Length: 186
View 1 (cartoon, rainbow, N blue to C red):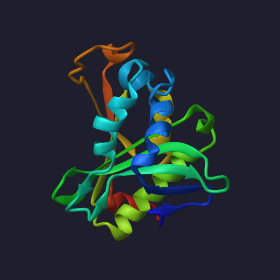
View 2 (cartoon, helix red, strand yellow):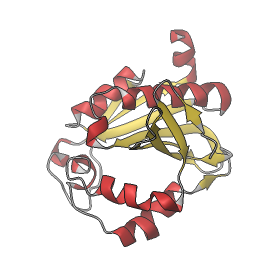
View 3 (cartoon, rainbow, N blue to C red):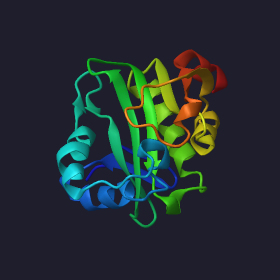
View 4 (cartoon, one colour):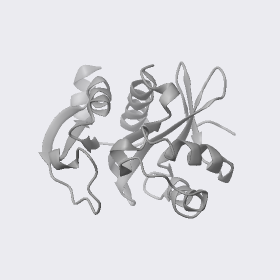
């Protein structure tokens, strides 16, 4: 399978139905899911019927998918995924950056490496004008990745959590980076 993007240590490729078991393991690690759903488990059926269809979605205005399975380049080990999705299906101008990596990948710079590569590709090849990302205010690791990737704090807000999880009472934060600001740094 032809990769979407390669970095020094990562390969980002399109998801396939064969990734269901890896996604199931990823989404059933309570620490990985702590700031997503409070660490609640998910079923393999939910991965196949809800998660995979979202990850396989094609964005017409982008000409490609917005979620990328991520493997370690040297070993082919599944690490998780990156999101680089247009906020509006029809246009690539504003995209949301996200990532979910397994615990073995934490603290190794993979999230920053993949994020920076996606941002560069977005601004140089995909017509992106603004990258946005958000997380719970208490998720300091994710916030650090956003900052190391060049995004800057934009705002603090309170989201509508259908089921509150620990830390959600502190709200959420949004970071962003525009093409103009990125070009000034390059």
